[in-house]
Length: 343
Image (cartoon, rainbow, N blue to C red; front, side, top):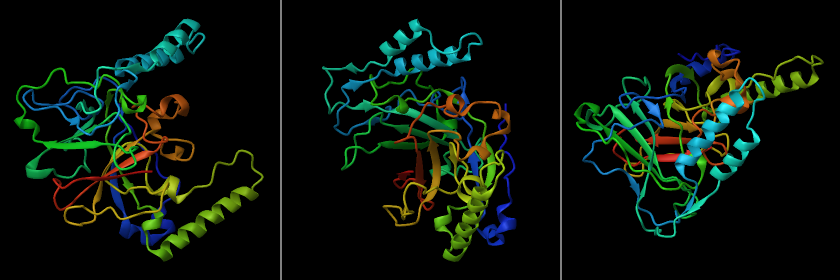
């Protein structure tokens, strides 16, 4: 099934013609639970990984001797999904609640050392043939694979993420690794993605307001304030929320490739390549939800009847405090180290 973004409630470029000069595109991935094959783009699906190539590991010393087992995370989700899908008496039974409580328990690995290499989790793989806004990889690579360490325990703060990106030529992969290594425990269930098939859709997007010229940004702010003031003065109990540039007209929510990064949690700051100092471009956005109360206008037409609290988090992935992870890449050389920000 495809996923279709509804038309925008207002045409931003009719309201502000100057925006046409800043128009871009992004590919919404629309991940949904399924059984993706190794030959397809996916979130949390099987990776096309050569049997003779070492699996990515986190080599940084940090605590990873206690946490939830990935298999328990997947099983808990299956139980809850089945329980809430029941027509009669939806929700977990008392027996299921006891099992869920058991599956939520953390497990200790006393034999493990903090310096032991920890297998990373395969988060996503994206083929260029499937994703219009995925840039070319180095040396004609057509497949991007994304991994992360399942613990927030990196960097100077010891609370940062650890990502690993790998480009490869899919046609050169021979025998594939059938059973990749898995971390025995994870720091949070939000690090464990559910296998999801993708429904890529390219849509128009516009930059975050704070990155537009100052005069245009001021006009956008004034227009949004007028919209909110008009809504506050309305006596119509059935009136919808006012249309906003940030939530309705610029950057869609959810997993996506290319386009513009949102900076709604922090002020924008430079994302320059550490190697050549070139301003980096947004490569991938990993989002905790596909839509929420503020971004509901982007909810796909095919999902209109679905509830937000159970259906807007198909991947099971959680970034930070239910935010989004923006991954940036150098446009000059995709082999240069990537950058990222959490919003």
